[in-house]
Length: 248
Image (tube, rainbow, N blue to C red; front, side, top):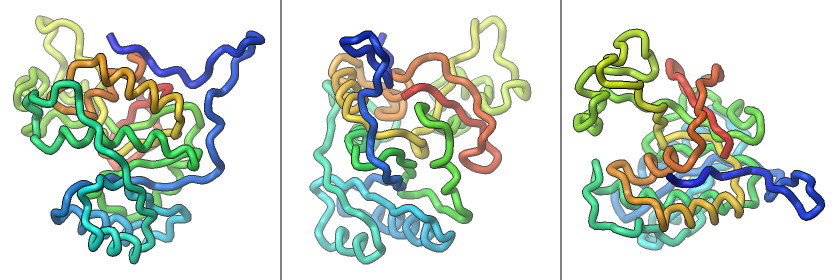
């Protein structure tokens, strides 16, 4: 089992101290790879945040294969462009639910953006129609994310999909008793709130080296690494959804 990631550690004097105090800045962050049309999604995300008058900038973590033309487009939209190196799983021959999921391990690099004290990650295909700046005001020391939906075809291989189980509304379709305990909470890695930390970043990379790849790449990896005591949280990350949180 992969180890959990502590936020605090015991110092030589026996006191609990914060490993990373972080900076004082906040920002949204997204991820971009390749020379395809996904850059249009990032532009749409930037325009959406600007339209709702967000007080925080959008950082775009890009892989080296993003062409200069696309980088200039992003800068013209007011984005902060930061190039990162790709991260690959130890065994990249595994069949992922979607082939492009494998590059999502590179998202882990954003935990190293220590110049920011708190960030909200948004996939490039997310559209913002009203301000979500309040997400930065959530209590510090936690990782916040949205519960995933098992009705999507990418889950067709799973027992959750076959029985129509919904973790967002578990009372609507109950988990069959003959199948044992209900599955643990599972979040969607397309949107989450986190606190960058060098210690957390290095722990994630170290854990990745000893953790077998999963069909959902980065999303499943984060859920595997985070502590198992996930709990529902009343604050909405997006309309109509339930949420989970765990110490980062």
